[in-house]
Image 1 (spheres, protein in one colour):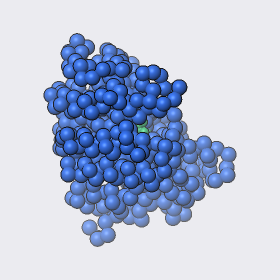
Image 2: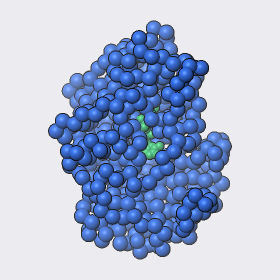
Image 3: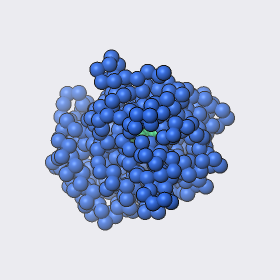
Image 4: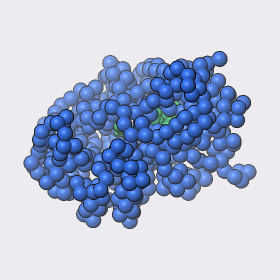
Length: 444
Ligand SMILES: Cc1cc2nc3c(=O)[nH]c(=O)nc-3n(C[C@H](O)[C@H](O)[C@H](O)COP(=O)(O)OP(=O)(O)OC[C@H]3O[C@@H](n4cnc5c(N)ncnc54)[C@H](O)[C@@H]3O)c2cc1C
C-alpha cells in the first residue's frame, strides 16, 4: 500500500506546502505519489471511502480551499524522456527541468515566464508560452495524456483514442482525473532576443499607450507582455526602482538580435528607461526575462481576455490598479494573436482564440485583506467588461465561485459537452475540489 499521510503525521505539512500560501487546504489523507500505480491506489481508496479527491504539484495554481478528502501530490513523479521532438514527462515535472533536457537536443518546450511552474498544470490550463505567438498554446502541441479517472483506471488519451477526454483535459484540468504523464512536441529553438525594459511611475501612462500601439504591429515571432509592478520602498529593492510603480515590458523575440533591436527601438524611446536587460540569450535563460519572485507567498489573482486595449481601458487600469489604487496590484497585459489565434486540428477547451490581450491582476494577501483584494479586482474587471471576451482559468488564483466562473471560461456549448463527459467519467463528481464542472444531470 502506498504511503498515506494524515493531519499530525510527520511530513504532512511539508507535503501540503506549495508556492501559494494563502489558500487553506486540510485533506484527511495526502498521498505523495511516486508512480502512476500510487495514483491508481489513491483514486481507488477515495472511491472505496466515498471521498472527494484533488491533485497538487507545485502549488502555483492552487484553486479552491477545502477540508477533508484525499490530496494526491505529484512532486516525486519527475521522469523526463525525449524521443525525437517529443518529450514525455511525469506529472510532477517542472518547466526548468524540461528546458534543460530539451536544450541538449537543440529543442525547447512551450514554457512560460517562470521555470518553476509545473508542466502538467500549466499545459492543462492552455499554456501561454514565451514563444506563444509563433508556436501557439502548449496544450495544442500535446500528443498524449495518461490519466487516472474516477473508476481507478489508467487511460491514454490522444487525438485517436479517448478523444473526449483528450479535449476535456486540455482546459478542464483536474475535473476529469489525475494526469500521470504528458507527451508533447518540442520546438526547434535554442536562443532568442529577450529581456525587459523598465520604466518608473512618471512614465506609466505613456508606456502603456506606447506598448499598446507598438503591439498592433508586432510580428508573430515577437511575444510580449507588459507588467505594472508596485515596487516597495525598501532597501532590498535596488535604486532606481525602489518605491516606483514600474512598467516592465517583457520581450521574447525569435528573430535575430539586430532585428530585435530595431523592433524595440520605439519602446526604448517611449520614456526614460530605468532598466534594460534586452540581449541575445540562450533559451535556458528564458526565466530571466520576467524575473518573477521565486519565494512562496499568498496571492489572489483574476483576469479577463479583451478584444482591444483602448484609452478608456488603459485609464481604468491605471485608476483601479495603478499607483493611487487602494490595493497594491500587479497587472500583466499579454499580447495574444499570432499562433495563439490559430485553431489547431485538435483544440482543447477554455481558451479564447479571438481575444487580442489578456489583462491579469494579482495582489499579495499580506498587503491587503482577501475581501479588499476581491473588491479591488472586481472594480477593475467591471470597468473592462464592455470589452471582455472571457476569462482564463489558468490565471485565476485563490478561491472564487466556480459556478459563476464557468460561464465566463467556457462557452455554453463547451460547458454542456464538458458536463456530459464529466458524467461519463466521473458520475459521482469525485473530482470536485476544484473549479468544478458538475456532471450533466440529464441521461445524455
Ligand atoms: C509566478 C507564476 C508564473 C506563471 N506563468 C505562467 C505563464 O507564463 N504561462 C501560463 O500559461 N501560465 C503561467 N502561470 C499559471 C500556471 O500555469 C498555473 O497556475 C498552473 O495551474 C500551475 O500549475 P502547477 O502544477 O505548477 O500548480 P498546482 O497548483 O500544483 O496545480 C494547479 C492546477 O493544475 C491542475 N493539475 C496539476 N497537476 C495535475 C495533474 N497531475 N492532473 C490533473 N490536473 C493537474 C489542477 O487543476 C491544479 O489545481 C504562472 C503562475 C505563476 C504563479
